[in-house]
Amino acid sequence: MEVTKGGIYLYEPPSTSTSQQAAIITTSGSEQSGLRPWVIVSQDAVNKGKPTAVGVPLTRKVHKANAYRIALPAAELIPDAGCTPFQDSVALCDHVRVLDINLIRKKIGRLSDNAVLAVALGLIFVFDIR
Image (cartoon, rainbow, N blue to C red; front, top):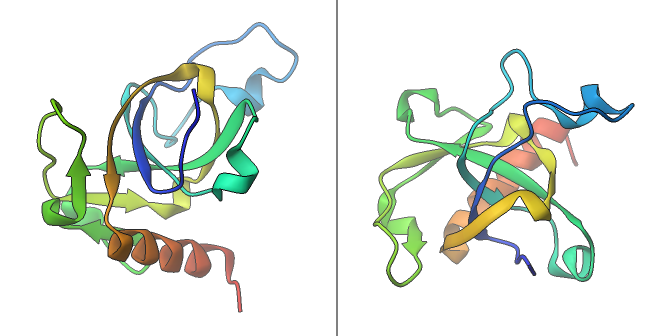
């Protein structure tokens, strides 16, 4: 599966692993786990032909919004044909993660151009990029 920047995909992080790198690829503590929508934030040139992409999870808990947890109104979340319309959400930019694209279940939509920029600003804040 090819993924694109700004695309919203259903992804389920692994909960267990038998590899030596299990602590790196599984979730624990406050990390987002379970099947949920993730926004791809890595550039298309980086994603092309790779088994991984960088993503940020979405939550519907809008009270979590702040300078680096970006509020995304439902109007900025564009569902793919046949998919359920989105609700107001928050991009958890402090939970950025490398995703194994083999664990992506399906594409469900995309962010508007304005929402892509807003999420980018959240990442700039998290990583203190100047």
